[in-house]
Length: 389
Image (cartoon, rainbow, N blue to C red; front, side):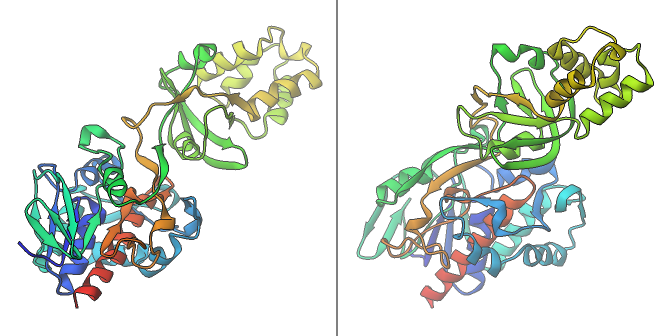
Protein backbone atom coordinates (compact mmCIF):
# COMPACT_ATOMS: atom_id res chain seq x y z
CA UNK A 1 0.00 0.00 0.00
CA UNK A 2 1.53 3.27 -1.12
CA UNK A 3 0.93 6.63 0.59
CA UNK A 4 2.45 10.09 0.53
CA UNK A 5 2.94 9.98 4.30
CA UNK A 6 2.69 7.56 7.19
CA UNK A 7 2.04 9.18 10.56
CA UNK A 8 2.89 7.20 13.68
CA UNK A 9 0.55 8.22 16.48
CA UNK A 10 -3.14 9.12 16.55
CA UNK A 11 -2.85 11.79 19.22
CA UNK A 12 -3.46 15.50 18.79
CA UNK A 13 -0.31 16.30 16.81
CA UNK A 14 -0.60 13.27 14.54
CA UNK A 15 -4.27 13.73 13.74
CA UNK A 16 -3.97 17.42 12.89
CA UNK A 17 -0.86 16.77 10.79
CA UNK A 18 -2.76 14.05 8.92
CA UNK A 19 -5.82 16.25 8.38
CA UNK A 20 -3.68 19.17 7.18
CA UNK A 21 -1.76 17.05 4.65
CA UNK A 22 -4.82 15.07 3.59
CA UNK A 23 -6.98 18.10 2.91
CA UNK A 24 -4.19 19.48 0.73
CA UNK A 25 -4.31 16.36 -1.42
CA UNK A 26 -1.76 14.02 0.18
CA UNK A 27 -2.58 10.35 0.72
CA UNK A 28 -2.06 9.81 4.44
CA UNK A 29 -2.06 6.77 6.70
CA UNK A 30 -2.12 7.09 10.50
CA UNK A 31 -0.95 4.11 12.57
CA UNK A 32 -1.39 3.69 16.34
CA UNK A 33 -0.92 0.73 18.66
CA UNK A 34 -3.81 1.94 20.85
CA UNK A 35 -7.39 0.81 20.32
CA UNK A 36 -8.77 4.36 20.17
CA UNK A 37 -7.49 7.73 18.94
CA UNK A 38 -6.74 10.74 21.14
CA UNK A 39 -6.60 8.96 24.48
CA UNK A 40 -4.59 11.72 26.18
CA UNK A 41 -6.99 14.33 24.82
CA UNK A 42 -9.92 12.49 26.40
CA UNK A 43 -8.48 12.60 29.93
CA UNK A 44 -7.08 16.12 29.72
CA UNK A 45 -8.56 19.00 31.66
CA UNK A 46 -10.63 16.72 33.85
CA UNK A 47 -12.33 15.34 30.72
CA UNK A 48 -13.02 18.77 29.23
CA UNK A 49 -9.71 19.27 27.40
CA UNK A 50 -7.74 22.44 28.06
CA UNK A 51 -7.22 22.70 24.31
CA UNK A 52 -5.15 25.91 24.13
CA UNK A 53 -4.24 29.07 26.01
CA UNK A 54 -4.97 32.67 25.07
CA UNK A 55 -1.56 33.74 26.37
CA UNK A 56 0.53 31.36 24.25
CA UNK A 57 3.95 32.85 23.52
CA UNK A 58 7.33 31.22 22.79
CA UNK A 59 8.65 32.09 26.27
CA UNK A 60 6.07 29.67 27.72
CA UNK A 61 8.09 26.71 26.41
CA UNK A 62 11.22 24.91 27.60
CA UNK A 63 13.76 23.66 25.07
CA UNK A 64 17.51 23.44 24.64
CA UNK A 65 16.84 25.92 21.82
CA UNK A 66 14.29 28.44 23.17
CA UNK A 67 13.86 29.93 19.69
CA UNK A 68 12.90 26.69 17.93
CA UNK A 69 9.15 26.82 18.65
CA UNK A 70 8.71 30.40 17.40
CA UNK A 71 8.22 29.52 13.74
CA UNK A 72 5.48 26.91 14.12
CA UNK A 73 3.69 28.81 16.89
CA UNK A 74 3.59 31.99 14.83
CA UNK A 75 2.22 30.23 11.74
CA UNK A 76 -0.55 28.31 13.53
CA UNK A 77 -1.67 30.26 16.58
CA UNK A 78 -4.10 29.70 19.43
CA UNK A 79 -6.57 31.84 17.49
CA UNK A 80 -6.34 29.52 14.49
CA UNK A 81 -7.20 26.50 16.62
CA UNK A 82 -9.96 28.39 18.41
CA UNK A 83 -11.46 29.29 15.02
CA UNK A 84 -11.48 25.56 14.16
CA UNK A 85 -13.21 24.75 17.45
CA UNK A 86 -15.84 27.41 16.81
CA UNK A 87 -16.38 26.23 13.23
CA UNK A 88 -17.49 22.91 14.69
CA UNK A 89 -19.83 24.64 17.11
CA UNK A 90 -17.96 23.43 20.18
CA UNK A 91 -18.89 25.61 23.16
CA UNK A 92 -15.93 26.67 25.29
CA UNK A 93 -15.06 28.77 28.31
CA UNK A 94 -12.00 30.42 29.76
CA UNK A 95 -10.84 29.47 33.23
CA UNK A 96 -7.93 31.16 34.97
CA UNK A 97 -4.76 32.39 33.29
CA UNK A 98 -6.04 32.17 29.72
CA UNK A 99 -6.88 28.45 29.82
CA UNK A 100 -9.59 27.46 27.31
CA UNK A 101 -11.77 24.38 27.94
CA UNK A 102 -14.71 22.69 26.27
CA UNK A 103 -18.02 23.35 28.01
CA UNK A 104 -18.93 19.76 27.27
CA UNK A 105 -16.53 16.89 26.76
CA UNK A 106 -12.99 16.43 25.49
CA UNK A 107 -14.52 13.89 23.12
CA UNK A 108 -15.71 16.86 21.06
CA UNK A 109 -12.09 17.74 20.26
CA UNK A 110 -11.27 14.15 19.24
CA UNK A 111 -14.43 13.99 17.10
CA UNK A 112 -13.48 17.29 15.46
CA UNK A 113 -9.99 16.03 14.60
CA UNK A 114 -11.40 12.80 13.20
CA UNK A 115 -13.90 14.78 11.12
CA UNK A 116 -11.03 16.88 9.78
CA UNK A 117 -9.19 13.66 8.88
CA UNK A 118 -12.25 12.35 7.04
CA UNK A 119 -12.33 15.56 4.99
CA UNK A 120 -8.77 14.73 3.95
CA UNK A 121 -9.57 11.05 3.22
CA UNK A 122 -7.04 10.04 5.88
CA UNK A 123 -6.86 6.33 6.65
CA UNK A 124 -6.49 5.50 10.36
CA UNK A 125 -5.44 2.06 11.52
CA UNK A 126 -5.67 1.39 15.26
CA UNK A 127 -4.43 -1.55 17.32
CA UNK A 128 -1.50 -1.72 14.89
CA UNK A 129 1.98 -2.15 16.37
CA UNK A 130 4.60 -0.22 14.44
CA UNK A 131 7.21 -2.97 14.52
CA UNK A 132 10.31 -2.60 12.38
CA UNK A 133 10.74 0.42 10.11
CA UNK A 134 12.59 -0.13 6.85
CA UNK A 135 14.05 2.73 4.82
CA UNK A 136 15.36 2.29 1.30
CA UNK A 137 15.28 4.14 -2.02
CA UNK A 138 13.75 7.21 -0.39
CA UNK A 139 10.76 5.35 1.06
CA UNK A 140 9.77 4.19 4.54
CA UNK A 141 8.10 0.81 5.01
CA UNK A 142 5.99 0.31 8.13
CA UNK A 143 3.35 -2.33 8.93
CA UNK A 144 2.96 -3.28 5.26
CA UNK A 145 2.66 0.32 4.06
CA UNK A 146 5.15 2.46 2.14
CA UNK A 147 5.61 6.23 1.82
CA UNK A 148 8.31 8.82 1.12
CA UNK A 149 7.42 10.64 4.35
CA UNK A 150 7.26 9.32 7.91
CA UNK A 151 6.08 11.39 10.88
CA UNK A 152 7.02 10.56 14.47
CA UNK A 153 3.99 11.66 16.50
CA UNK A 154 4.06 9.01 19.21
CA UNK A 155 4.53 11.44 22.10
CA UNK A 156 6.64 10.76 25.17
CA UNK A 157 6.51 8.18 27.95
CA UNK A 158 4.39 10.26 30.36
CA UNK A 159 1.18 8.56 31.60
CA UNK A 160 2.06 5.00 30.55
CA UNK A 161 -1.36 3.72 31.66
CA UNK A 162 -2.73 5.54 28.61
CA UNK A 163 -0.40 3.56 26.38
CA UNK A 164 2.43 6.10 26.28
CA UNK A 165 5.83 4.67 25.40
CA UNK A 166 9.32 5.77 24.46
CA UNK A 167 8.79 4.59 20.88
CA UNK A 168 9.69 8.02 19.49
CA UNK A 169 13.18 7.70 20.97
CA UNK A 170 13.68 4.22 19.52
CA UNK A 171 12.80 5.56 16.06
CA UNK A 172 15.05 8.59 16.55
CA UNK A 173 17.92 6.26 17.47
CA UNK A 174 17.16 4.08 14.45
CA UNK A 175 17.74 7.10 12.19
CA UNK A 176 20.62 8.62 14.14
CA UNK A 177 18.76 11.58 15.62
CA UNK A 178 20.17 12.88 18.90
CA UNK A 179 18.07 13.17 22.03
CA UNK A 180 17.91 15.68 24.85
CA UNK A 181 17.60 13.41 27.88
CA UNK A 182 13.86 12.85 28.48
CA UNK A 183 12.47 13.44 31.97
CA UNK A 184 9.07 13.77 33.63
CA UNK A 185 7.65 17.32 33.57
CA UNK A 186 4.57 18.98 35.03
CA UNK A 187 4.92 16.35 37.73
CA UNK A 188 4.40 16.21 41.53
CA UNK A 189 7.53 16.37 43.67
CA UNK A 190 8.36 13.99 46.51
CA UNK A 191 9.66 14.93 49.97
CA UNK A 192 11.83 12.93 52.36
CA UNK A 193 11.19 11.79 55.91
CA UNK A 194 12.57 15.03 57.33
CA UNK A 195 9.55 16.79 55.81
CA UNK A 196 7.04 14.33 57.29
CA UNK A 197 5.33 17.23 59.07
CA UNK A 198 4.13 18.57 55.72
CA UNK A 199 3.45 15.16 54.17
CA UNK A 200 1.08 14.55 57.09
CA UNK A 201 -1.19 17.42 56.04
CA UNK A 202 -2.08 15.62 52.81
CA UNK A 203 -4.95 17.24 50.93
CA UNK A 204 -4.31 20.81 52.11
CA UNK A 205 -4.02 23.38 49.33
CA UNK A 206 -3.53 27.13 49.33
CA UNK A 207 -2.49 29.98 47.02
CA UNK A 208 1.30 30.29 46.79
CA UNK A 209 4.20 31.55 44.78
CA UNK A 210 6.41 28.57 43.97
CA UNK A 211 9.98 29.32 42.95
CA UNK A 212 13.05 27.45 41.74
CA UNK A 213 16.10 29.64 41.12
CA UNK A 214 14.67 32.82 39.53
CA UNK A 215 11.64 31.09 37.98
CA UNK A 216 8.34 31.60 39.81
CA UNK A 217 4.67 30.74 39.31
CA UNK A 218 1.80 32.15 41.35
CA UNK A 219 -0.87 29.47 41.63
CA UNK A 220 -2.14 26.94 44.17
CA UNK A 221 0.14 24.38 45.79
CA UNK A 222 -1.08 21.11 47.30
CA UNK A 223 0.51 19.08 50.08
CA UNK A 224 0.26 15.33 49.40
CA UNK A 225 1.12 12.13 51.25
CA UNK A 226 4.21 11.91 49.04
CA UNK A 227 5.19 15.57 48.88
CA UNK A 228 4.07 18.58 46.85
CA UNK A 229 1.70 19.02 43.94
CA UNK A 230 -0.84 21.52 42.62
CA UNK A 231 -0.51 23.86 39.61
CA UNK A 232 2.33 26.00 41.01
CA UNK A 233 4.42 22.94 41.87
CA UNK A 234 3.75 21.24 38.54
CA UNK A 235 4.92 24.39 36.78
CA UNK A 236 8.22 24.70 38.63
CA UNK A 237 8.82 20.93 38.42
CA UNK A 238 9.61 21.34 34.72
CA UNK A 239 12.52 23.61 35.64
CA UNK A 240 13.65 21.77 38.79
CA UNK A 241 16.77 19.59 38.85
CA UNK A 242 17.66 17.04 41.56
CA UNK A 243 19.37 18.69 44.53
CA UNK A 244 17.74 22.07 44.00
CA UNK A 245 15.53 23.80 46.55
CA UNK A 246 11.89 24.72 45.98
CA UNK A 247 10.74 27.87 47.74
CA UNK A 248 7.10 28.65 48.59
CA UNK A 249 5.68 32.04 49.47
CA UNK A 250 2.58 31.38 51.56
CA UNK A 251 1.95 34.92 52.85
CA UNK A 252 3.48 37.78 50.87
CA UNK A 253 3.16 40.34 53.68
CA UNK A 254 3.98 37.95 56.52
CA UNK A 255 6.03 40.39 58.62
CA UNK A 256 3.28 43.03 58.57
CA UNK A 257 0.63 40.37 59.23
CA UNK A 258 2.38 38.99 62.33
CA UNK A 259 3.12 42.44 63.76
CA UNK A 260 -0.51 43.46 63.25
CA UNK A 261 -1.70 40.24 64.92
CA UNK A 262 0.60 40.94 67.88
CA UNK A 263 -0.95 44.39 68.37
CA UNK A 264 -4.51 43.14 67.92
CA UNK A 265 -4.36 39.94 70.01
CA UNK A 266 -1.21 39.90 72.17
CA UNK A 267 -2.39 36.91 74.23
CA UNK A 268 -2.94 34.70 71.21
CA UNK A 269 -0.32 32.25 69.97
CA UNK A 270 1.38 31.85 66.61
CA UNK A 271 -1.10 29.26 65.36
CA UNK A 272 -4.00 31.67 65.80
CA UNK A 273 -2.26 34.36 63.77
CA UNK A 274 -1.40 31.94 60.98
CA UNK A 275 -4.91 30.47 60.87
CA UNK A 276 -6.31 33.87 59.93
CA UNK A 277 -4.66 33.59 56.54
CA UNK A 278 -3.93 29.89 56.02
CA UNK A 279 -5.86 26.58 56.27
CA UNK A 280 -5.98 25.34 59.87
CA UNK A 281 -3.93 22.19 59.31
CA UNK A 282 -1.23 24.13 57.49
CA UNK A 283 -1.24 26.75 60.26
CA UNK A 284 -0.72 23.94 62.78
CA UNK A 285 2.20 22.49 60.83
CA UNK A 286 3.87 25.87 60.35
CA UNK A 287 3.44 26.82 64.02
CA UNK A 288 5.08 23.53 64.97
CA UNK A 289 7.92 24.16 62.49
CA UNK A 290 8.45 27.71 63.82
CA UNK A 291 8.47 26.28 67.35
CA UNK A 292 7.38 29.49 69.11
CA UNK A 293 5.27 28.74 72.23
CA UNK A 294 5.03 32.22 73.78
CA UNK A 295 2.03 34.50 73.28
CA UNK A 296 2.47 36.96 70.43
CA UNK A 297 2.80 39.87 72.85
CA UNK A 298 5.91 38.29 74.39
CA UNK A 299 7.69 37.92 71.03
CA UNK A 300 9.85 40.78 69.80
CA UNK A 301 9.25 42.27 66.36
CA UNK A 302 12.68 41.01 65.26
CA UNK A 303 11.71 37.47 66.30
CA UNK A 304 8.42 37.81 64.45
CA UNK A 305 10.35 38.84 61.35
CA UNK A 306 12.36 35.61 61.55
CA UNK A 307 9.11 33.62 61.69
CA UNK A 308 7.77 35.66 58.79
CA UNK A 309 10.74 34.63 56.68
CA UNK A 310 9.47 31.05 56.75
CA UNK A 311 6.05 32.18 55.53
CA UNK A 312 7.55 34.12 52.63
CA UNK A 313 10.38 31.67 51.86
CA UNK A 314 9.39 28.19 53.03
CA UNK A 315 12.09 25.95 51.58
CA UNK A 316 11.92 22.30 50.57
CA UNK A 317 14.55 20.08 48.98
CA UNK A 318 12.54 17.46 47.06
CA UNK A 319 13.93 13.94 46.89
CA UNK A 320 12.60 13.45 43.37
CA UNK A 321 9.41 13.37 41.32
CA UNK A 322 6.50 10.94 41.06
CA UNK A 323 7.82 9.94 37.65
CA UNK A 324 6.23 9.37 34.28
CA UNK A 325 3.18 7.73 35.86
CA UNK A 326 2.05 11.10 37.23
CA UNK A 327 3.78 13.45 34.77
CA UNK A 328 1.46 15.34 32.46
CA UNK A 329 4.17 15.65 29.81
CA UNK A 330 7.75 14.69 29.03
CA UNK A 331 10.51 17.29 28.85
CA UNK A 332 13.43 16.64 26.54
CA UNK A 333 13.11 14.33 23.55
CA UNK A 334 14.29 14.57 19.95
CA UNK A 335 16.87 17.35 19.79
CA UNK A 336 15.57 20.39 17.91
CA UNK A 337 19.05 20.82 16.40
CA UNK A 338 18.16 17.78 14.28
CA UNK A 339 14.99 19.37 12.85
CA UNK A 340 13.87 22.24 10.63
CA UNK A 341 11.86 24.69 12.73
CA UNK A 342 9.72 25.50 9.68
CA UNK A 343 8.81 21.99 8.50
CA UNK A 344 9.73 19.74 11.47
CA UNK A 345 11.69 17.57 9.01
CA UNK A 346 14.93 15.93 10.09
CA UNK A 347 17.86 17.76 8.53
CA UNK A 348 19.81 14.58 7.93
CA UNK A 349 17.01 12.21 6.88
CA UNK A 350 14.85 13.38 3.99
CA UNK A 351 11.16 12.69 4.57
CA UNK A 352 11.42 12.00 8.32
CA UNK A 353 9.48 14.39 10.59
CA UNK A 354 8.98 14.68 14.35
CA UNK A 355 6.19 16.64 16.04
CA UNK A 356 4.43 17.23 19.35
CA UNK A 357 5.69 15.82 22.63
CA UNK A 358 8.27 13.64 20.88
CA UNK A 359 10.32 16.81 20.31
CA UNK A 360 12.34 18.75 22.90
CA UNK A 361 9.68 21.46 23.28
CA UNK A 362 7.68 21.45 26.52
CA UNK A 363 4.98 23.95 27.42
CA UNK A 364 3.69 25.31 30.69
CA UNK A 365 0.61 23.84 32.34
CA UNK A 366 -2.63 25.19 30.92
CA UNK A 367 -3.12 24.27 27.26
CA UNK A 368 0.34 25.22 26.01
CA UNK A 369 1.38 21.67 25.16
CA UNK A 370 -1.73 21.12 23.08
CA UNK A 371 -0.99 24.33 21.19
CA UNK A 372 2.48 23.02 20.41
CA UNK A 373 0.92 19.76 19.20
CA UNK A 374 -1.44 21.67 16.88
CA UNK A 375 1.24 24.07 15.61
CA UNK A 376 3.95 21.48 14.99
CA UNK A 377 1.41 19.11 13.42
CA UNK A 378 0.21 21.76 10.97
CA UNK A 379 3.80 22.69 10.10
CA UNK A 380 4.63 19.08 9.21
CA UNK A 381 1.29 18.54 7.45
CA UNK A 382 1.84 21.53 5.18
CA UNK A 383 5.40 20.45 4.39
CA UNK A 384 4.22 16.93 3.48
CA UNK A 385 1.50 18.32 1.25
CA UNK A 386 4.02 20.56 -0.50
CA UNK A 387 6.43 17.70 -1.20
CA UNK A 388 3.67 15.36 -2.43
CA UNK A 389 2.67 18.08 -4.83
